[in-house]
Length: 320
Length: 271
Image (cartoon, rainbow over all chains, first blue to last red; front, side, top):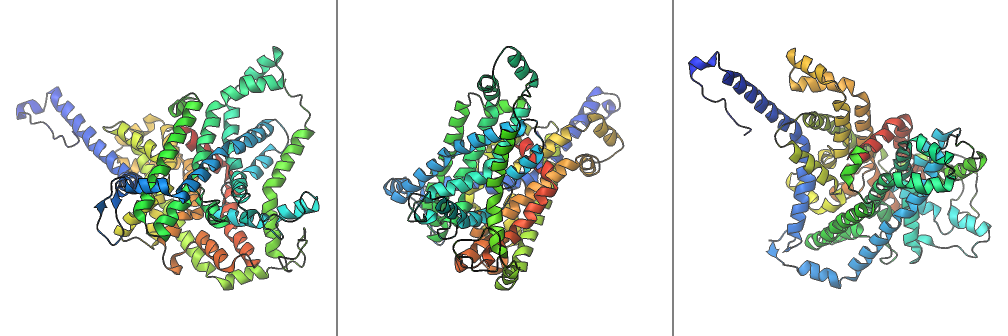
């Protein structure tokens, strides 16, 4: 249809026929549609090249034996079967689930902060800026900052805990099988907290003030109003924060890579670091592709589950 | 009406939160300017013997200028790509045409594919394009972002239809309508695009880690991670480097935080 040509009309008809006007308009519209496709072309090319093709290629690769110098051979489900036997894979999957599971902790803290910042106190913009400031910063640098905070000898956290007599001897947070993953999660929440808060704050500001006033007149206390008005109306924002938090935590490669490198042992290995190591350290691209497919399915499944929990669909947020 | 909570507990809680957010910065800043052994116990709370030797060390220990130039070049390409491509795509999306709903669907499904889930084929594709280890290759995946397209679209939708029709009657081409009518009316959308594209590309770590091979092409985050891996954390220069890398992003954010926050939230709720 895009390449529709001007219909042939007898010369006699050309000057007067309404068909002629119709044809010109059609031609204009066709030409314009073509132009719009040209405008879309660069963006479409980038998304095709770096989103669509990779996902398809990845799927194909996960069913092949392939190395950068060799020929591809069909592998069936071999790579997936290998994964079932692979302890590191299970550890990485489990750690990823723990990191996703930690997102609600950050959201609850952020909700408390959003409610406080939303009250009409002096200096609320300053508080908002300070709480948000860690979000846009380079994660590699944030990881180094937190390595230093968790340092065994002179890290602030150990120092404060020892000074307050909470612990007898310093805890080697990032070298401990128990503490390494929680430490990474703390750094992760610290960085994304401000972003959650901004999303929730935007949601809070859309709740009409009259609702609260009417409820207050009817004798509802602040706690009651929070559970019955604020929280239900905030549901889309909370869902959005969760999806963003999930995407963020699932992908927090930079933090893990710099803070612990996945160690000690495999204590902080997550799926993305494992994909990186399999693919780019051991050059097992085909196996890494299989892990990537599991990672991708996990991502979609979690988003879907969160959507169900929120009791709506993502599209509905557009109209809010 | 409902303003009857006492103020001081709110301030107290928020001051505590601000303290938790700021202390890690302070701790690193303190270390980077201290003249004493950074492993002395107990650590001093206030820097003693303040000096900038570690900052000078960074300058001599690593090719900071080279990393900085790479980071700037990649970010500039990404910013230009975003502003130009996103504006064009968004303008097309403000009109109805055949296949538009397909394009919108495609964009929305692309949003569900995080870059980390595509690294292996993305690396192979970039290799086939012959762009490994180059500025363009580093910037290309980030040269158009869906959130930023929607930021432009929201702004273009607000431009009155009659203005565009008038421009068409005056014989302006669609191309010129974008650059001479839409863009001057969308300053805050441009600002949002510039800031988001800059910050994303400036902070990006995984992609440069995978695709740069020569030391000459490393960007700042990569340089920082490499510095950590050969020096371990034995020197305060690491923390000086950290502060030097954080400063530009922090400065840009403080200057333009309104646009930044608006962009993130509008992108987030639109997308």
